[in-house]
Length: 188
Length: 194
Image 1 (cartoon, rainbow over the protein chains, first blue to last red):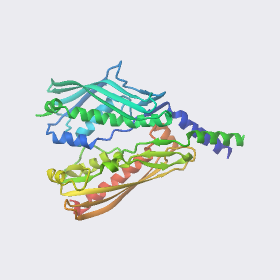
Image 2: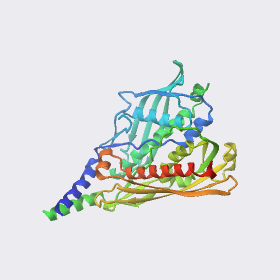
Image 3: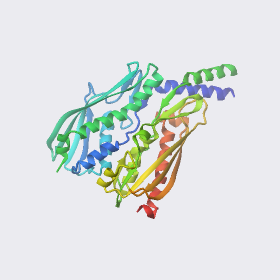
Image 4: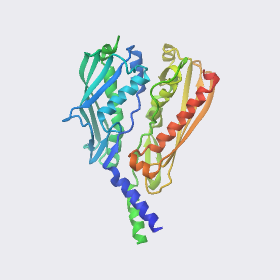
């Protein structure tokens, strides 16, 4: 019984203190985004390299009141965004590794902030470049911002911030697909 | 010593207690459709109200977890249907005849998702067991029902896995993946849905 109680206490404390770092949830494609892509009538594309600005891109971690939020995709948020884009293109049946059109990008800003008492904020800005057979046909910085309900209590604020990250990426991709110049650059 | 350990355990449990922890149970589904799809256009319905609905369940230590089952499974449901049919459209209302017509949908899937949380450790809050049940009916655009079934999946995660993966929705994710695998098999083997 002594051992059981000690193990239980340790387990509970580990879960409390084990919040030094946590992965963002896996990305789930936004079906509105997928339908937007599919209905745009673009040609097949492939997803190239996404990387992050080393000074501002927060590629490896985002600090949330002392917890380090990390990407479950290769440990890089740039890879998370690239995989999110690829998953929506794939669901729209538009992905082809041999396509002549390639989408790449550089994360400029990537942050979730829960320093406020009631409201959390999140920002994702990335330069997105489309190349057709090597020639640049689109080169713009795209940005998405969102706010979400937060709390003074870290036990509430931090999980809400973690849940917000994939929604931020969905909003970023919706903004990208909503840019006519981007869609035109993918169209045959 | 026994008493001290109990006090520590209780203290830790109380510290953890009274919290509602948001978790995500989005399953991982192969995004790339495989094989030749059934040459049908279908639709499925998840209302905005369902999508936004958060479920709260009590777990170990008296804490609760909150999650949005429709929001977390919406994308995976699309991917499963998209791997079977030529075209899939998400409807926010079964009566959206304009969208059904525009996409040429000949079948409309109406899912109802019910979840249960299980826990075998009274001192930690992440669920160690989960059940996801997808009860669904399939109807023609006019409303005539052609098929109904239920796909159930269960998932478990040990404390060690929860800690190692830092993924506190792991058992739910596994249950959702199992339910969707069953759903896929049911649809593929139903002649009414070809």
